[in-house]
Image (cartoon, rainbow, N blue to C red; front, side, top):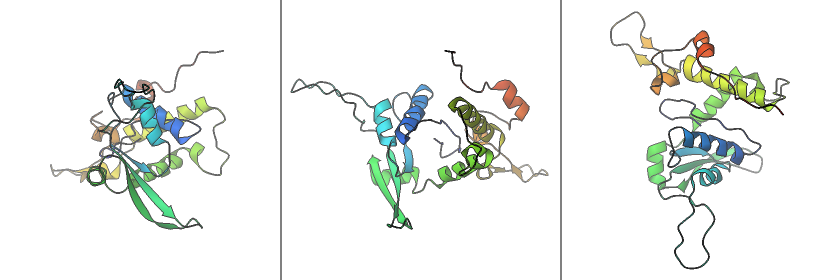
Length: 214
C-alpha cells in the first residue's frame, strides 16, 4: 500500500490470495498509525480488499434486543474506498475505466483520491525492475517465503529511503549550482531529512523477522 502524496510504501502483505495479502497490510496499518479505521483507499477492481477491511476493522453491531444477536463484523459509515475497474471485451482488449464507490460517496471519493491509481502500477514496475524475484517468466524466483519477504523488505527500504523520486523533487530557491533538490518518499513523508546511503541502511535498520526453530 502506498501513500498518494509522498509515494511512500506504507505496508506490504503476503498471501496466496488478494484477501490474505490485504489482511496483512491492514493489520500493519492498524498497528502503525491507523488504529481506528482504514485510510481512504483506491485500488483496481480485484476482490479481497473490501473483505480484508471488514476482517481487520469491522465491528459487530450492538445487540438491539430484538431477534438473534449479530456475530458478523460490518463496515463502518466513515470508511472511504474507491475501485478503478478496467473493462475489457471477451478477447481481453481494454475498453475503458469504470469507477465504483465501495464505501463512501462517489463524488467525494473522486475529489479525495482522484480517478487513477497509475502510480501504484508504476511502483509495481519499479519493484520488478529492482527485484528479479518479481520478474515474470524467469528462474529468479524465491524458493522460501522467508527469503522472499526479506528481499521485498530490502527493496522497499531502498525505494523509501535511498532512491529519489522525480515527482517529489523541489526547485532550489537559493540560486545554487543544483537546480533541484532530490527527495525520497521517506523525506516527503517527514520520516527523515536526507537521502540514506546503503551503509546507513544496513547498519541502522534490522531486516527480516525472528522465527523460532522447530
